[in-house]
Image (cartoon, rainbow, N blue to C red; front, side, top):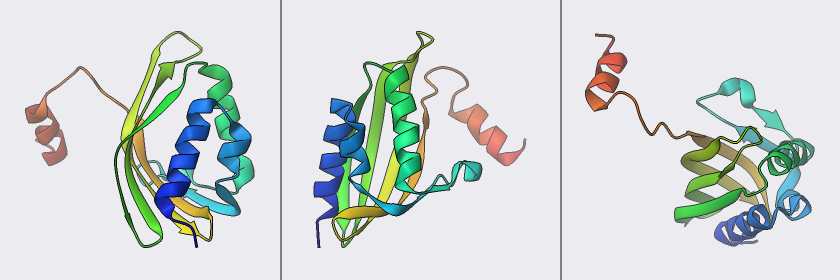
Length: 135
């Protein structure tokens, strides 16, 4: 059995090399992707990984992935990521969050993504607490 951090390292290197084939090779054909904060984005299959990342890398020529922190536990790897680049419309990509991936053999069988665009301006913590509290 592989080590989840080794597969995550291969995946990140493939992302940064814009190597979609290398990325897809990190996933099982029946890979399950979930985004708990956006349930409608759930999908099954490495073919959809290919579709998604081909579109992203074609549109974001300078895409770069950084793993800021990582830990693994058995067949699961927990990573804090930051994805940056310049979108096709000229705006900055600055997505940050946590990715949890589960390994089966030498490839990922499932992933849970808690990644979204960073909000770098706007209301502070007090407003966020009021919104959460409904006050």
